[in-house]
Image 1 (tube, rainbow, N blue to C red):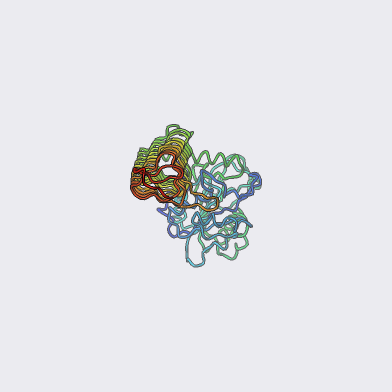
Image 2 (image 1 turned 90 degrees about the vertical axis):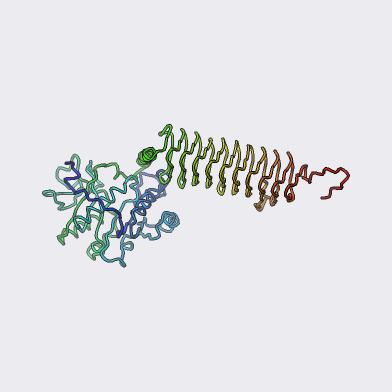
Length: 460
């Protein structure tokens, strides 16, 4: 039987339904040399507290709040809201529910990005199983002066001590992590009100003293993987935590059927989803907010951010931001699809193409060396090499549209706002300043309708 089983029966909860979760994002250390609180630093593409917020939402907790360091609440309220946290405060007291009777509260450190949902469920299950007033999440390790140790007698917790005040504190000890579960009525007790405004370890001391005085049960769940409890203290630990989290992310994707050709050179952020049988080549970065389907091929040196890519898409060494790509498309090499780009099924975007706020209809093609800005393009359209949609007049960006089956000749410049009708054509080098009717060929600078009758007068 392992140490974990001796200390706590293994009783994970199935969810955190009925629980109120408080993310303690108040920690700030001088060693990190930053104006940003520790919990707000990015780890694998997400702020450290945001990764924990994602976990508690997955586990269906009743409510989630965030404890923010004094003076930072207003500054970070929009970021907190982005991660689903509407309730924030500089005092835990304001986050304790008054409208939910007999609920359980879990306080989780926001600068602890490696903590897993399984550990949180086991802590909740232990707390519920033993019907404790307070259940601490502890770890067996080397203590320091800044940490708090658990003192046991006959296996039962009788007090919490600081290492410098304990007898024989050398060697490995059971250490309080700063994560705990407690009954809401304990946190609302008037005897510990003063502790609610202090740091997390002083609060835990106060809760333990209150439990001791009232002869209420204190329990602990001890994790076996000490690395889960590591916190962001300085830039070195931040880098270490990010490296370990990225290893975990890569392992998870490979276990789910994604091929990573050179895992250590591939950077995948924490909230990215990738379908099975997709192949990711070396030196690829896939950033937060991205979704990639199955049977895709992401070639080396591609960067994908906040984009949705459906099945059987190939990306050759290109950059995508805020882009949606339907099934069966190819992009690149060396293209840049900016925010608002949309490729319908079967589209081909070739070499050195830039798109912004534009939509390409099904089976359309943009060969190479083109700029498409603020344009809607129909189906089966061919955009020739060197085409420019001139969408900006120096003060305003204008919208244009190109109809189905149109053919835009190489080096054409379309001056927005303009409409090119279905089956219309522009000759190579045309400078198009006026709308082109369906089925019409225009050419020249400025472009005019092609006239097969040389005696006919051309106006305009």
